[in-house]
Amino acid sequence: MTSQGFVSVFAPQLEAYLAFKQAMGCYGTSRIWYLRQFDTYCARHGRTVFDRETVEGWVSEQLARSGRYRSWMSYLRDLGRWLRAHGHTDAYVLSDRWKARFVPAHPYLLGTEEIDRFFTAAAHLDVFSPWRWQAVAFFTLMHSCGLRTGEARALAAEQGDLRAGHLDIIWAKGNRSRRLPVTEQVLDVLAACDKASRDQFPSRATFFVSARGNPVTAAAVGVIFNRIWDQAGLPRATDGPRPRPYDFRHHFAYANIERWMSHGADVTALLPYLSRYMGHTGFKSTFYYVHTSPDFMRGYADLATADASLLPEVGFE
Image 1 (tube, rainbow, N blue to C red):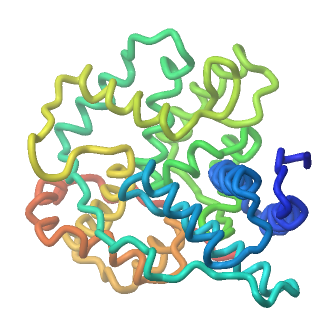
Image 2: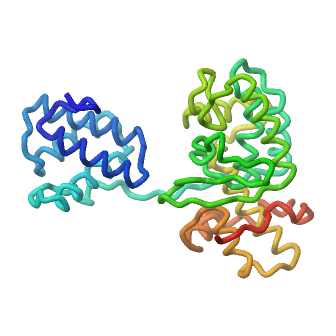
Image 3: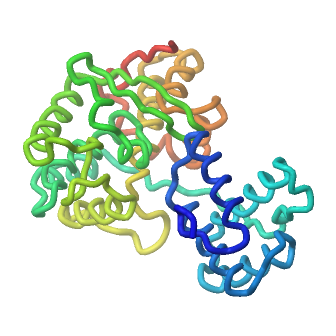
């Protein structure tokens, strides 16, 4: 058995592939988990060749459990390409016909009153976990800095220089890093959270932690978001988009663009700063946040009189 627990004939290749991915900054546990499932399948069925029958046999079996969720297929497809690039020229690369049809997400448009009620409830969250003092800071980073959920979860304790007034987002999506200046109000929120966490978990690795001092999980973020939403007494639509933590990031993009427009600023000139601040590779990704909601101008009309200082100037060094 290897260090990752692989037992099939493909164990050495699987170990080498994961070492390669980690060297590229990809440390996701999901990849490892699914490759273990594939490895177990191969050992159980005596599969010794990485061919179409082997790969699609496991994919078919896995689909019976996961239904329409198919993102895990990319791990097998990528593994096949890696094997080919490393001398296994007959390795099968999973066909694109297995890809699920892309269905664009439709964000829930957060209103000013909903956001105010959400953060009021978060500040008085009745739980015994670190979320009691972390919730406001975590969702403030998404709302006021446009962070991805995963970026907030992975933020290391030392990556927030609260005295200098910036955060370092390291090896984010696409292995890109960026430094984000933040406002004094956000710094105050982060400082209060940091002090409470240091008192309870002096050697914590990440800025936000679970009750055991470990990094918070994506599932935990979703659970606490829904708990705060319900504690705030906010309604849930029976049809249409439903609120999610990621909608704070959508709101960040919409709010800045709408605010610039309401102040007569040149949005085209400012868009590179927004794109850079949000960690996008190009403007196309930033425009996505507008195009996903054709009604966003009406949905965010109440932001026209808001403060224009939400987005500090970001450097390109």
